[in-house]
Image (tube, rainbow, N blue to C red):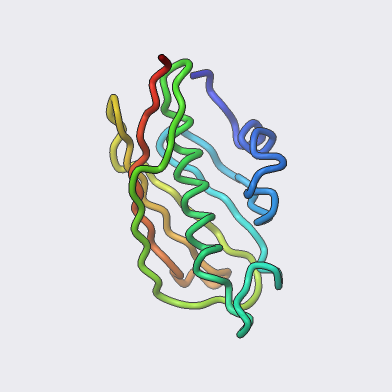
Length: 136
C-alpha cells in the first residue's frame, strides 16, 4: 500500500463516521496513529459525559486507520475483536486518541488505543484485532 499521511487519511475519511465524530488525524505512521476530536453535545449521554460508544468508535476508527497503513496492495481490513476499559469520564474539551501497533502479521494486526482528556488523564484503553482481507 502506498504511504499515506495524516492529510491523506483525513481526506479518505470524509463523509464517514469519523466526520460525524469530528475526528481529525494529526499523526500517521505504520506503527502509530494519533487523532483528536472536540466534545460536542451530540456525542454525550443525558448527563453530558462523552458516551462510551463515542469513545469506542474513535478507538475503532484510529485502529482501523493504523491497520490500513500496514496493508499489502489491494487488501482491506475489518475489526475482528475489540475490548475497551473505561477509566474516567469527560464532559468538555478536546480528546486525544493515541493508537500504537502491537502486532502486524500476514493475516491480522493488533492495536492499542488510549484516549486522553486535555489534562492528560487517560479515559479509556482499547485493544483491537484487525483482520487483513486479501484480494480474491
